[in-house]
Structure formats: structure tokens, C-alpha cells
Length: 281
Image (cartoon, rainbow, N blue to C red):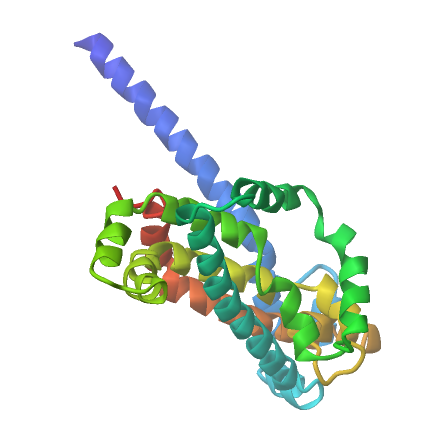
């Protein structure tokens, strides 16, 4: 009896230490974000003061007004929404179609194509940036939405994700539809697409996160403010207004709001989708 109590107390102590460590790690990760939000309501003098102010002495709401009037952050937000939204739609559609082809059709070179796609995982985007830039320039897509969208309209990860999911869909569903006279397009739209919704939702969320935060490619391919996204816009704002930290923090908060909203709205759906990636048994 005494031994059982000791074991129970030790297990409780280990659990308490484990959760305390998780809480400390979470607070450490959240600290920069919390300070960013706090600094967005401060005056510049409050940010650069010593010692550092963790909380704003007074809420300076005009920082957000100035970031929309002086910086015109709404224009960059609109560009990011257009680019990211279009990339999500194209990537989900093209990756689902490609994954269906690689998973359910038999043709020469299919495995070679899939292996080539997997091989591209090993190539960093920084290596591909120059060839992509030369290709975009040859198409006269520099400083355009086409140049920002096209390189991300079909991704290797998306093809891999959709192919693995669709491969687990029983072939009997497809064969039965073919026997009933359904066309391949109808099979894809009425059978494959509804069954793939969990994987498609996961791919859409991951595509949003990746492209909303993308900085290198928009920096390379845009030359004017007309098509610059929010990440590049904030970088240029920092270059032009190096000491306006309070406005930069306000802009960073505005840029982070869509990601936070997506997380709050889609977190349950994302967990359900992630649980369904193993396929249909």
C-alpha cells in the first residue's frame, strides 16, 4: 500500500514537472508575439526606453490609423489576399488531379514521375529561385500576379499528400462508377473529390500558411508597390522608416491577423483533417 502511494506521488510529480516544462516553453514562444502586440500600442519613445516597457503606458490606437494612412497597408494586404487565395485554389485543384492520376491510373513512367516529384523535396527553393526568375522574366511576368502565383500553383508536397490519400480509396468505388457508365471527369468530381475533402482541407490550410508568410519570391519578382505583398511591404517600410518601430509593430500585428483568424476558425477542422489523412479503409 505504501509502495503504491509512493509510485502514485512520483508519477504525479513527473506529470507536474512535464506540464510545467510545457507551460514554460509555451510562454517562451509566445513572449515575442505578446511583446509585438504590446509594442503596437506604444509610442516610439516607450519602445526604445530603458528599461524596456513590457506593457504600454497608455494605449496608442493612432498607430493603427497611421499604418493604414501613411503606409497604405491595406493595399499590400489586398495583394497578399489575391495571391494567397489564388494559390490555394490552384494548388488544391491541380494537386488533387495529379494525385488522382498517379494513384489510380496505370501508364508507363508513372512511378518515374512520382519519384521525380519526391526528388524535388531535396532541392531548396533558394536553388530554384534563379531559374524560376529567368523563366518568369522570359514570360514577361515580372511584377505581376502571374509571376507571384505560377511557381506555387502546383507543389511537390501537395501532390505527395493527395496521391497518398487517394491511393487508400478502394478501387471498387471507381470500378463500380465506370460500370455504371460514369465518365472519368464525373468520377473525379462526384466520387474522388468528396472523399478527399479532409486531405484537401489540410492542403489548403498549409498552403495558406506557407504563401502568406512567403518573403523571398515576392521580394525577387516585384519591382513596384503595385503587386508587393504584405511581407515585402513591411520590409520596405522598415527600410524607409528605420526608427518607426511602433508603426512597424502595428503593421506586423495587422499582417498576423489573417493567420490568427484562420487558426481560430479552422483548428478543429485541421485536427479532424489531419486524423483523416491515413485514408479511407
